[in-house]
Amino acid sequence: MLPNGVIGPAGGEPVRFTGEAAGLHYGQKGSLQAWKENIAAKAEKNALLTFALSLAFLGPLLRLLDVEGGGVHFRGPSSCGKTTLAVAAGSVWGGGGPLGFGQTWRATANALEMIAWGHNDSLLVFDELALVAPDAAGMAAYSLASGQAKGRSRTDGSLRQRAEWRVILLSTGEISLADHIRSGLRGERPMAGQELRLLDVSADAGRQMGIWEELHGAAGPAELSDAIRQACDRDYGHAGPAFVKRLVASKSGAIADAKMWLTQFLIDARELGDSGQAQRAAMRFGAIAAAGELAAEYGTVSWPKGWASEAASKLYRLWGAAFGRGSLREEGQVMRQIRAAIESRRSAFEPIGNQATTEGDEEQPAVCVPDREARSHVTLGFRKVHNSEILYCFHSAGWAEVTRGFDPGEVARIVDRLGFLVHDDGRRQKSVKIRGESHKLYCVKASLLEADLGD
Image (cartoon, rainbow, N blue to C red):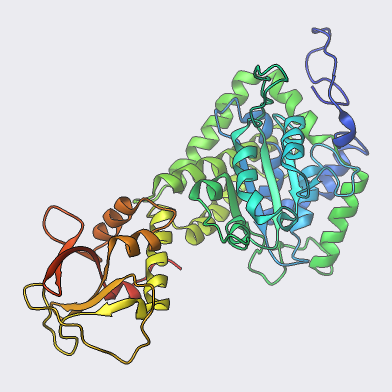
């Protein structure tokens, strides 16, 4: 059911649209054939445009494939072509607005929910992430992907029915969601769940032409982007409904074909040691590939069989190289957080033992040795030498501070598993004598400072 019509067999049950269509940009102009020739045809040999258009067809398949909502964020500098990707993808379903079919990120939380509700089982396009406040960006990613509006009560205290939706989201911005969250006044740490709900994809094809790899006869990347934008103003809103008509006509076969493409993508993309997070992201890349392959099978687009999967696979590999596939995202974040604390606040570690020798185990009397560094008024712990290696030993308060935002015990387990924690048998802490008293400390090897943490 769309604001401008119903897709389904003739003579079916009458359906009336009761929503507010003024805030949406569903509609049709021009023709499907012209759209295929002037927009979809330019996607061949251009992986980013293929991926964006394939993504636009995924909305109606999300429930059929049992794939969660979420989306992709195209990140890149000004004038690289990322907005062209958004406008082109939007032209699958409509256009005519200032951003074609798309919306701006500048909206209240309530408005974002209602916009998502209006695009249920379809495509949702938001342009320029910087327009939403950093403190609200992470919650917006969770909300839009979760598919549920905020719970609200009536005046009598009873619960209102929640608005629910499942959409595929395409976002653009000059910085990633994670960097945008960190830029807030509170300097919040982005959660891996937020980054997985809105996957960050670079809007750079690596050919010094922004999003483009093949110009298809255009004099330059700017000319091709302008041509795509102009074509999206002339022809839009035909491809999505045409795709759904074929989907309705052969639902069981379409589901089988889409699942086959998705399964094949997951098999081809899998690497030994992939984390659960990498596999979760692969599911979305694979679903987008399956939608693109189905659109090609239906003749809704003009690219050859296999090209949508190839484009999605290429972008998934690039995403994985940037995000990290072999370990959980949180592991790299917490290790970098500990390293940064040591590097920036070495004076917050009081030296104990004989720092000039390779001795200094807890069995020896620990003597405070003055050094030439300015002492910090707030300490994180102590610095000592153990078996020829410097250890940074955090007391409980210091460990809680540097692991803020994480579970301190889980962090100790991660640091130990990666081989950077020295501890007593059967526990994550080491007993260290300081001025005759025994203290339980989290002792981190200085070799962490030279480790490759994927940054």
